[in-house]
Structure formats: structure tokens, C-alpha cells
Length: 267
Image (cartoon, one colour):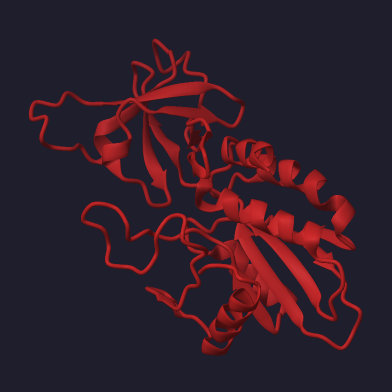
């Protein structure tokens, strides 16, 4: 499974630019789906038909990742940018980024006189090797994703875009294992989650499911000075009960806990 994880997490696919991700995921699911469609938003939707008499279930994992978009090119050929999704400026300096065509750029910032301070996004730029605006090979509106390789250390994995490519891997594996069910199950590999769950909302409006389950990542509470949360690495899956935008259906939470306990799955 690590080979699939590596392939997906290292791939390019900022919000709004998920074409390459769709092309990677589709071959992985084609032989397990009864029907595959791509909606107007770009969501990849794979349906597994039930035997009848069940519910319509939507399982969603988002394909997109946070990234950057070129907003201005200086006369010297350096690329200023804005954010796509939630970017922390302190993670940027020295980072490598990749454009849709595979071109690599390096992020640096305007001169820092106080090393204890962090520049905002507007004081950073991407160097793509251009010497002037005229010979810059990228354009305003081009998007970039980050370049960070997948690392496996025992059962612990690290990579960029685990949010939410790991959810996509879980959905793919679930499709493979799902054999007989009365329910029609729609596996949605959604777009533009990092800018407001836009793809999943469009898919839900189109499918109109009875039950919706989102596969995604969350914070852990076992780090130095952590967010106080009852989640630790290696101690099982997290079943969400609430976040800033929603309260999970209590009946579905109870069902997940009950099924996990019956199957001896820690949570």
C-alpha cells in the first residue's frame, strides 16, 4: 500500500488543479466500480451498486492539496504569489515547489533583518531561474504545489498532502474490500476542499445521499504543548464528533464506535 500512498502524496494537485490526481486515481478504482463519472466541478465519483433495499451512502475524500498561485512577476523575473488554502508563512522559506508542467521553483523572501520575525506571504517570492519578466517561463494564475518526498519509518508515515491523499487511499482500499451490501455506495474523490469543501458540497447536492462519511486527517494530542484533543498517533482511527463547521450525526458516531468495537478496531 505504501507504493500507492507515495504515488498520490507526491503528486501535483492544488485546489482547482486536480486533473493529474484524477488521472492517477481513476485506474486504481475502475475495475471495482460499477459506474464512474466526473461532475462539472471535477469530482471523480465511483458508484458501487447495492443488492437493493438499502441506503444511498456517500464516502468522500478530497484529492486537492494546499498550494500557491502566481499573482505578479517582477521585472527581474521573480514570482510573487498568493495562497491556495491554509498556508503558514513560517513553512515557506527554502521550500521547493512544482508547477503543473513539472517545473521546479524555490521560495525565498525579502531580506530578513530580525531572524525572530516571519515575513507574510506578500514578502516571499518564487525563483524559477528567470533573469527578467520577459524570459520568465510561468504566468500569473499558474498554481504550484509543494515538493516533499514520502518517508516511511516503520508504521509512521510522513509526506506533504497527507491531507487528504491518505483519505483517498483509504477510500480506494475500501472499494477493493467492499463485496456485498444492500446499499448503493458512492465514493467521491472531491476537489477544492482546501478552499471551502466546494467539491464535496456539489457532489452531495448531486447524489443526495442518505448518509455521508468524510475521510480526512485531524490534529493529534500527543505532541509537546498540544491542542487538547483525545487523539494520539498509533492508537487508532479518529471518529469526529465536532469541529468548527459541523456537529457529527450522533447516531452515525454511535454506529461507528459499535462497529469498531465489534471488529476490535481501536479508535
